[in-house]
Image 1: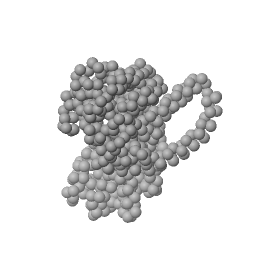
Image 2 (image 1 turned 60 degrees about the vertical axis):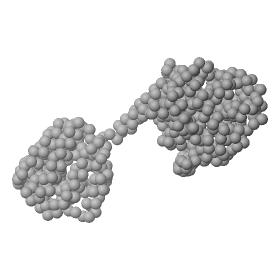
Image 3 (image 1 turned 45 degrees about the vertical axis):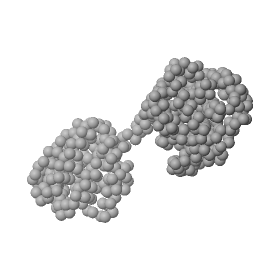
Image 4 (image 1 turned 180 degrees about the vertical axis):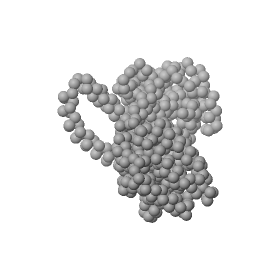
Amino acid sequence: MRPHSSLKQEFVKKWMAGLQRCSFSNKNMSILERKKAIKLSADVAMASVRNSTTCWSRALISSASKDGSDNHLVEQILGPETESNRPAMANKAQTRRASVCKKIVKRSRRIRRRGRRKCVAAAPAKALTSTIAKHLVRKRTQVLKSLIPGGEFMNEICLIEETLDYITSLRIQVDVMRSLAAGASVRASE
Amino acid sequence: MLHRLESLESCNFNGMDVAVLQRQAARLEWQQQQNYVVQNNNLVELCASSMPQFQGLIGRNLGSGQMVELKRPEVFLGGDGFQEFMNFPVAGPEFGDSEKLDLVPPEAAADYCISRTSSCQMTALNTSVMKEEREDMIPEKMESPTGSCRESFNKRKPEAVADHKSKNKRIKGEGESEVKTKCSTEISRNSSKENSKASEVQKLDFIHVRARRGQATDSHSLAERARREKISKKMKCLQDLVPGCNKITGKAGMLDEIINYVQSLQRQVEFLSMKIAALNSSVEFNVENLPMKEFPAYVANFPAAAKLPAMAGLPYFQLNPLQKESVNCMLNESMLPPQTATEGIASASVSISEQSLSSSSMTQLQPFPTWNMDPQGLYNMYNMGFH
């Protein structure tokens, strides 16, 4: 991975560009709108730093461009890099197909589980604890999947890799934003 | 065996064709490779590369009705196995013959390979020499002690005995040799490189199929193990990354911690964007030099509100009313023009560098000890990009 500082610089550059575009478009914004724009631009900048090499960044951009109200914002932020919108469209079809597949898998799993329940009842306590542990892990994995953008369609290895990447970029984002906020507040108090 | 025959044939018309020399060199190389591979008893790599190619070639050869390919097996199997051999390209990777050729123990195979290479270096060969070699090669195979080899054993045995002892079979052997010579002449007539290549690939395929059959069940568990190792490695990385995750053992606890961390980070982003939005407007205030009486109160309010969610991980929405109220009372008076907004941000970021140099007031705002943003670089970057 590249060193932290260079990632940070890239992120700041992209974010600033996005903010510029945002603020040029709308002259009058309420605080909430502005907050939304800032967050969106920060997210999109963070994702575009990754250059759509990771799943979560692609999912983030595509989900941002999917929302009707935010669509124009994303277009403005991404602006020149219109080709990054196209994979988002391709992703849509993929996700639809994936959801269909998922349904089928779920249905089959339900059937299998019916059979398994009898086995669990018959099994000794040791096996039962292990199944409980597995269940806990599965539950938490699902929560994590819901947290990470585009996590619903990842397998376990992919999910953990993406989580690693996502956490590092979130930290960068938080760092930059915090420093910006602190700077702004200091300047404001002067 | 087939391979050996091929090499012998190539030796036969060594003088005629110059290209054969090259072929031979290539074959020698291949044999060495194969020797090594067989000795290690690990055939996967070699096989995996050659399989699909081979099948295609076989299909083509049979389709075009080239007799060369069919005659050689006839020679080599002594008529008995011919039928099986005919079957096998149709059957694909699961043909029954593979078992037969499969199970040469490593030492025997190595010997076999060596004898092959030596035979390759002979220049002039008559049919009797060939027969001899074939005969001493078959007992070699029969010596193979593995129990799983028994099947091939049974099939081979009569043939070998025939070659050794009975007169009847010897005649047959002579017939074979005749066929062989015919074969070689035919090949020399054709003497196309493609042919030799095809046979070579064919040879490779034998190895290929066996390895595949042997490790079919094993690969699953291997893959599973590799996957689990990968996951645990990645989890270790995550453990290093997520603070407070070092002491926790067990996957569920670790996942809990990771989830909490990600959630807190997301909330922080959410909150910080709010803060920046608010401060941005306040900076605009400053730029436009408007009177601001309520501003100190707001600033006094804000850090207190800011510290709570970041530190305790509380959802910041609880603080929303307070923020909104204080922000809204400020915002009622002025809306920022766009250009000055970006200027405000830029100037704010310049002030970061000042602040991080003095960094005493920063510590109360940031819960994480890792603050590795270098002020110089950021400052330069801002100057470059935005001024």
